[in-house]
Length: 150
Length: 194
Image (cartoon, rainbow over all chains, first blue to last red; front, top):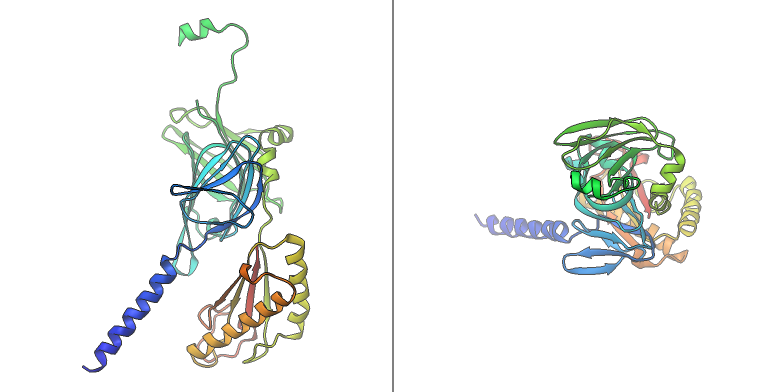
């Protein structure tokens, strides 16, 4: 019985530690190329897409008339945008040991070049690009999308 | 609709449409994508094969092949912004030590070169061990290995702020073994240069 509190405290500590690791919105990738007007919107905040900026799940990437942006995600997926483009990295899960794999990119407009990474390599149905007119299922590797709506 | 088309004389405007297209990757391989909406689906798996979609209510067009010049015209800017993929290296260590093997000393110079050539923005350094010793001991050992490599990188002028140090101990074996197994290929630090 005397050991119980120790066990409990240890368990709480372990949980807190794991929580801290999982809860710290760990970066899912970073900005590697940026030119002209290029921003990252995170919640209500709009950040300039500066070189090396760490990306988080849910970030919205936008380029202006003279803008371009290239990003690398943690699983080696590479996304790049031409001018007047907008995508949201809706979901990014890369924990191969646990079998947690997912990448969903929502593309609202513009042009994008996409090179799939390890998520697509490890799981055939885990990577998807959603546009207003159709959904792309990604087996790999390099493809291009232009979204132009009526 | 009829009235509208009567009211606009001259050549009809190019209809707005979305486009999906596969191209070979840097190794020349062509992958596969599917383009699907509620009215249809198309599979693209040949070089420069494209499907266009007018709206969510129109089925994706059957695949057609796009000319290189067209691809460049439409997607040139997006392709120009494509980043290089991260470079990865594995450095190996002597048994129960944070000292690099001679081969890895040599490889380290290539790591330095890559960092400089790419203008590294972020470098991840992850230490590992084999399964000799306790889990806790190995966690500390692989931490020392990762810190040692980080020190060597910092000595070459790498800003410590872009160094990400992790220790996985014996929990992330490159070569799967049982417990208490000496395995030189598991005694390593993995470096990713972004």
